[in-house]
Length: 468
Ligand SMILES: Nc1ncnc2c1ncn2[C@@H]1O[C@H](COP(=O)(O)OP(=O)(O)OP(=O)(O)O)[C@@H](O)[C@H]1O
Ligand SMILES: [Mg+2]
Image 1 (tube, helix red, strand yellow):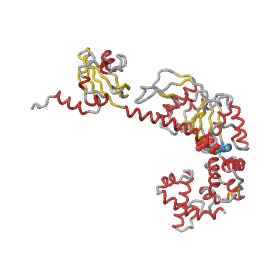
Image 2: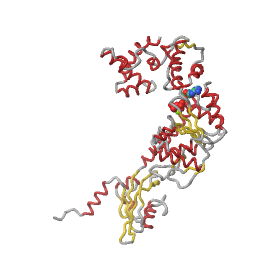
Image 3: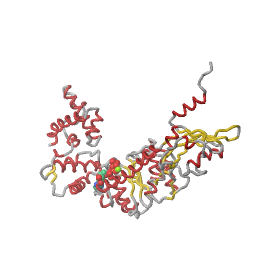
């Protein structure tokens, strides 16, 4: 049975309900059809558009810029083109358009343009980029507060052979622009060395820009490092990347092993050619930037684990600084302790003999940063003028508690005692792994924060005698 509804009115109904703007023109560029969505996006009513040439209706567009005219002229479709224009009401609109020719045989008799309004997406991505810039600024402020602003090799405390040798090497390499690879465990002072190399170099008046490669997903990191040109993707703008911003200075790529391999390949090209190309650009920019990278594990292992590209490794391995963990240079501990006490306290502070012993014994998994935080924390909680064992952070006290050890060494314990021991072990481990962050530790353990806090309080009371 033949339907009573004419197919053309069905299409009309359909087109008036879709979210995309639909604009149909004849071979001269005169509008034949203009749907509700297009009217909403462009701020014009169909009666203002239908029957008139497109360029008359949109005076801000030229024949060269209009995708509709281009398609009418070439007969070739254009897909996903970003277009920004000002509508009749003076509102700036950004759309993504796909424009296809309508052909009869080889003859182009018209064109259909389908457009999606991405104005809000674009402004959102711009806001994200601005927030990034702001955050980047804050990183610098934070660094300055931490005393990391402008630093030199004199800011690195330590008399161990390893540190003395490293400082000599750093002094030597500071004069050149060769790439440097710094590796070591967390908190060993990698960033401090990198900043000191910059601070001692002829580039010291130039910018120092750190970027943690683990902090951003790959595609965003690429945009941030290389910059973008407008039109390269929805909402892209002309923005310089960190390579350009670091011109004349040093770019520090922290945790290089977290950078996706394709991006590592792109970085290798920058190191070889000294030029960068913004995402979506066709031109290269010369950049004069010294690249320093850090790796939190042995780079040879990172290559084996396919985290670090071998070709990049050979290029950046010109000078390598391995910062040893604090437990391998215990002679630096007393100096660092004095340094941090002076940093965080204006008055004279004594350190008990027991605390000094604990400091020399403890393995410092968080290295110098952990020592720094231990002293900062102790100075906050102590009441007199002496740092005593009870002022130390839980993970240090726990290490010296008599309950240390796992269930294996507690075979004779009763079940409830054994469970308590295991629980205490797991809590200490979580606290250690999260650097003392209770919220994160509770998440790791899968228990509410309040429960953890209560258990910690109990543990603290029990553990205290263990170190005195
Ligand atoms: N030799 C040192 N002398 C003085 N301060 C130090 C020394 N080594 C590290 N520090 C301090 O310890 C903290 C951690 O150092 P830094 O941020 O350089 O470590 P990192 O190796 O980059 O750590 P991560 O791998 O976790 O990023 C900083 O506050 C830094 O100033
Ligand atoms: Mg670091």
